[in-house]
Length: 245
Image 1 (cartoon, rainbow, N blue to C red):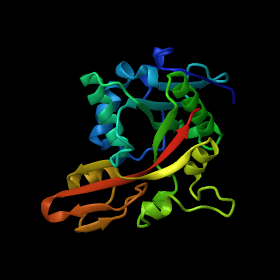
Image 2: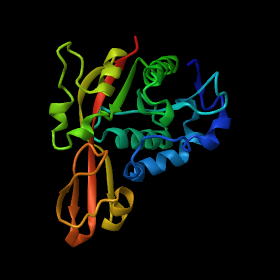
Image 3: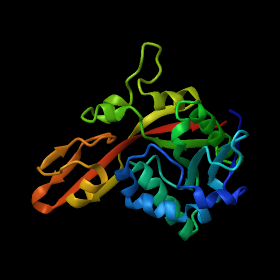
């Protein structure tokens, strides 16, 4: 498949369907309030930092998207994904010059998963970040096999390797093969909270007992407190650094 990858600013016609693409994201992931904020302003505020891809076979139909934000920070924040977005917006409003750029996501259309588009989008993000004058692209990576081991600490999982020295996790391998280096864990990269009724609606799980609840697709257990009618999911991610020079 031959992809045409541009920015959303160059092809604004994709803005209307940017979030309608069928993807593999779990519903509870879409209820992070920082995600709600970002997706609402992304097309008009960060269009220069959103990459959109279509193919020669299906021109005009979104095949994949990749999102980035420039921000300023002293080191890589523990609040990862949420923190990069919050710092990007606050810095923009406050007139702070960003000193780094963070990848936020790569989403491939569901029917194209496994066709090799993800490495192409990583390469495109690296190239675009370099064109914007940054010498490093950082990413709070969500390991795509961690949900199979929700009780394994991310600090253990992130640095696990295969006999060939590459990461155990397939998505982390893509980043390392592209030139990235695993730096540290972002222990509270995304936080999703809700009432028990909301969590039941998002997941189909009963949420009828206090304690830790395993939810399909979650990288760690959800903390449920029946007596107080709430549950909270704190997702750890993995900061990866991509030097660009």
